[in-house]
Each structure stands twice: as C-alpha cells, then as structure tokens.
Image (cartoon, rainbow, N blue to C red; front, top):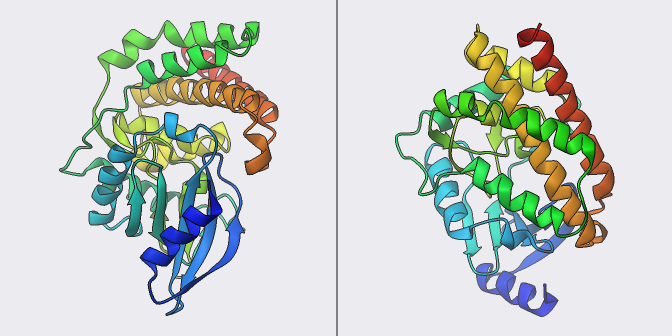
Length: 292
C-alpha cells in the first residue's frame, strides 16, 4: 500500500494529529499498526496483505462489525475503506488470548459467542462454508497438486456433509474465532475482534475455529458452551474442526505461492503442515468415538 496514501488517510481521520506507535505482528491477513491520536487515544490501522481483499467482502465485514459493536462485544470502527479494505478500529487495552500468559477463561469465551449467536440481527451474508472451500481448493490447485494426505482427510469429511446439512443451524457467526481474535482486557474483560469472515453459519463452527490452537482447546470450549454436549455436538465439532483445518491448509498453500510470507513473517508451508496435522488429529478422535 502506498505510504503517502496511508498517511493521507491518517491525516483525514485524525485532524488534530497522530503518531504511529508501532507495527503489530501476528495476523495472516493484514499488516497492522498501533496509532495514537493527539489525545492519547489508541487505534489499530489494518492494511490488507497481498491478495486478502479477494478473500473478504468488505461491505459485509463493515456491516457485521457494526452488529458486533452494537452487541457490546467488540471495539468501534472509526474508518473503513470498503474498496481497499483499509480500516481503523478502536484499540482494546490488553493482550490477545494467544499471547496471554494466564489460563484461558473458557466461560468468558463461551459467553461472548453466546451473545453473538443469540443476536436477533442476522448477518447480511451467509458464510457458505462448502462453496468457500471449493473456491479455496481451486485456488490452491492452480499452484500445485495437493497431497494424498490432504485428499484422504478431505474425502473422509465429505462423506459426512449430508449429516452436517441435516443438523445445520444458522446463526450470526464470527467464523474465525481463534485465540488471536479474542482480547483479554487489562480489566479482565474479554472482547472479540476482526470480523472479516463473519456471516451466518452453524454455531459449532465458531467453537471449531477456536481449536486452531489445538483440538483440545476447541473441545474444552465445546464442553463449556453446551455444559453437557451430546453425541451430535461432538460429531459436529470434530467434523467442522477437520473442515476448518483443511480450509486453512488451502489458504496457506495459496499464500505461500503468492509470496505473502515476507510481509507477515509466516512460513506458510509450515502453516499448511500444521493445519493438516490438526485435521488428522480431529479425524482420529472422531473415528475413535464414533467408528469403533
């Protein structure tokens, strides 16, 4: 992104002055900066990385962030360029859950998701996971053939698509509710950020995305969210966990060949391998519980 253009945005938004405090590292989709205005109020400026705008509908993102803000679970947006994908949101003093040194408060995570999933206002868009997956796979295949390991897990998942469709519930979802998108505030309060992939979907999908850190963490959230989950909830969790990992495997392959690692600091081939292993672990647990 042109530095002069970025500076012009900041000058227009913060007419009384501003300073860029630091670059923030961690996300695969954006280059992010901590910005402070002349009144010591902090914000985060997100600039899309590489081909990120091809993965995200910014009009939907803006609408969905407003839904979440009105629910009281995220920060306020102060600037959004839906054409270029540049946005500025209020900064939440605290640390992302993936960098938090204390224990995960699963109840606070579950409470946030319950608020979102109980929203009376649905998103203007459906997430459409299977169509999205088809598009990601097509993109990855344009760079290289995919591995036998990938197809083994992918074909296993697809045998259960009818089951997921039969037990599908559609609510307002975040769809990327991994630890890095939860902020533990300095006051101990949890907030949810980054609504790039928000859309109507099955609530257990959000629980599955929390398992990006480990299948165990998603499983613990499932137990907290439902208190006493039954067979259907466990089946859907493991299946959606497989799906999420396969989806991020495909995204990582594409990002590697699009040379997006330089700006983000990620080795995307390592990311792809990580998610394939995560998928295989979820598959093993599903088989152990339901295919004895």
